[in-house]
Image (cartoon, rainbow, N blue to C red):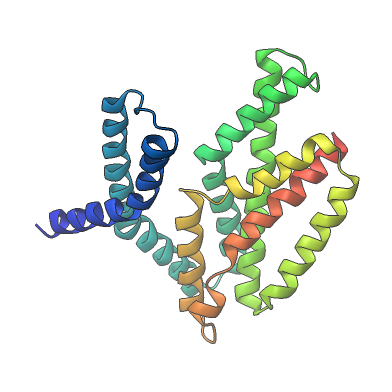
Length: 243
């Protein structure tokens, strides 16, 4: 009964959150363009699927991913092994990013464009290899970023200095990196912070900051996502320069 009530509330919240964009699209389609919706039945079915999917996704985060992420962070903190904690942080960032649907999509699209531009051979094997290598570079960068974020929590380093240093490095690398990799690199920083990575990484940071004496979950628990956004840009730009 409690689960049904929670899901019902999530459905209402999802419908409310999606209502503005639905109204905007409907207004421009009907009033500005003055055209009927193509395949209206399919559009309505798709809208229902989006509402239900968003509601279930949010419920799943609160019921499963957030609690397990926080509990694992607390367990590592109580175990007292910084080496194991950092190894887990790297593996978490690597594994979550490899599974990101947005990264899979942009890597495949980048491979298609690279093949059309003649940067790689116009063959399935070459495209698959390019997309896989790009995904691995981004995934490793996020793993390294989470390690850096965990070290910041453990050591109490100020986040603004790390962020400023990172983006200064991004600016320098942008000047020297090949033009064709710059856009891909900047987009890679955005697609890493999506449906899988964000909940797990956020839960890890909050759980770790909660468990360590002298750390504030609000001040120290957040910020790992910022590293996960910036580090892929650095790694992909560097990858483009050495390839």
